[in-house]
Image (cartoon, rainbow, N blue to C red; front, side, top):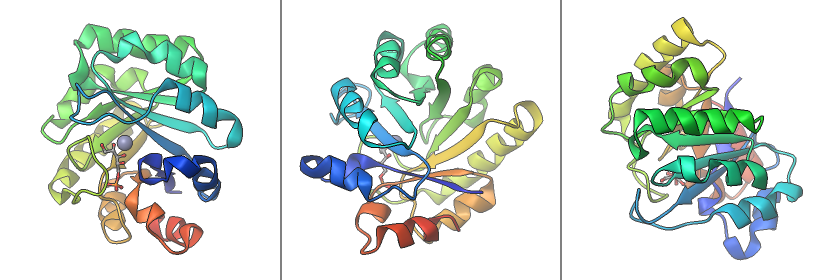
Length: 214
Ligand code: DX5
Ligand code: ZN
């Protein structure tokens, strides 16, 4: 079963409760956290996670596009994140391990993310200790960018690692996923698809979520 994690980066922040209510047929709520350092954009953070936690029963899938995430993972968990993913490029390997350890100590699921230029093998030091691996199919920082189909071999390689080493781990893709590109992601082995503009620009959001399941 393919899971859909709509990105609220494409929601109307003045009507966030309404827009989260519109995605209740999805599987997760994808929360894009940007710090203006790790990526050239600033979005939302801990207080917003805390505010939306009581208004949905869906798990909050929090994608940290921040420098040295180990500094903040406890606070995101306490605010109500269910899954917290950290970029492998955002700190030393040792500190990323520490961030994952802290997330687990809070009883939450932990994951690692790779940017487009980061090779598949960069997830290997973490593969035994994560519940999710996220492969970016755009450069992180902005919604509405063009899907990078050339990331599909990396998704396939990581699917191979997961099947061999940690079959319960979820494989998520993020960026430019729409009713056409979702098929490539699914065929390459992803089981969780993030979609921002494709969901929030749709006339019929539940129908679009169903369509993205492939
Ligand atoms: C990009 C974010 C994505 C983004 C996806 O930095 O991580 O989650 O919101 O948006 P779309 O689906 O519009 O590419
Ligand atoms: Zn994201």
